[in-house]
Length: 454
Image (cartoon, rainbow, N blue to C red; front, top):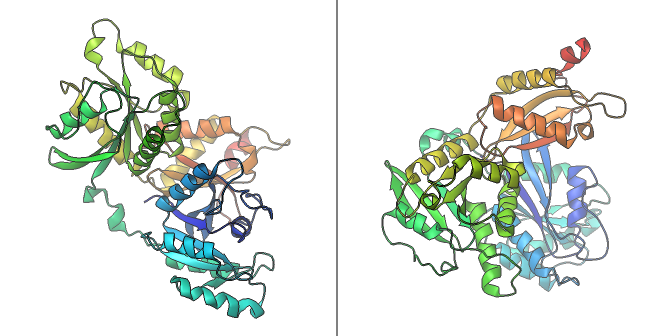
């Protein structure tokens, strides 16, 4: 399963960012008395009691931003809540329950994941009785903490680990044949709905030459070779910035469909050039670490005039950071190559769910360091001690090293390419974390023998 997401929410000025920094044991989020400082989601990989999880900080709920970014902040909060496995609802023990806290609680009662109430600013036992009043919000007894006085950090971390859902081997078993969800995204009039109709073998979607016919995301279930699929057809997006609500919600729903999907098909019309909207969609797919296939549709119109290699080069030159993504040439209207496209999608789904043993991963890493050692950093060469895979969908790998800052982005890209070349992740995104090895961790340095011989 993916690495669990623990999301911090609450109204402004209850100490969410302070709590985030305190739990992460490092200064990442900006802390200020002025409300509304945090706008985007901020994440940090945590490990407690040998359990990895991502801690996520969010903006204040119910805050009207002075720079007219309220809609953006709320969207980021919604995305975080939708992806959460556990929510930390932070309140201020000094102010007690305010009306805005009650509004936040009302919203959280609708979510389907556990919610832990955190009474912040409970500096000592004299504030405990005030914190007990948070029981009435309906989320059980609050965990009483103080980031300023360093009170009960271990208690809260233990509560997080105890509350996070356990992922059993049965849930990770590929033999369970889970239903694969495929999001079909792209600009207007590139043939997305026609493609869905071909999949469903019925006119389940409205097909029209009028751009923008589909204004909402629609799920269509179908079977192929006895296996169940869900195709998520999304609104067509148009270039240029539009102030119309219908276009704003179209983009919002398309992004939500990408987040819901196991595999994303980014459609292109072979008779048109790649535009800004295509690049925006690609960037969003990459930011969500979703397996993606670039689909070149209506190929029957150009097949006799242009070799596929020319479009492949065009795609690679345009989407330089996603050269690992496969490319499919299809004609949705006739169904040509559609089945092969779905079969390839199943391969990506399987890759994204793959696990690599620690031994195999570290042998590969040792060979990669031997071929190319890390660059010098402050006149010293960083050491990579070992690696471990901590999650799937996307494959998530943690490198324990002496100086995480010394492994610069080019060297990280080199390692990611090595993972793709030598492991089962050759066509899917990989999430890579760098962590400094703790002094108590005595596991071997995968490059120590190599660097000694250099």
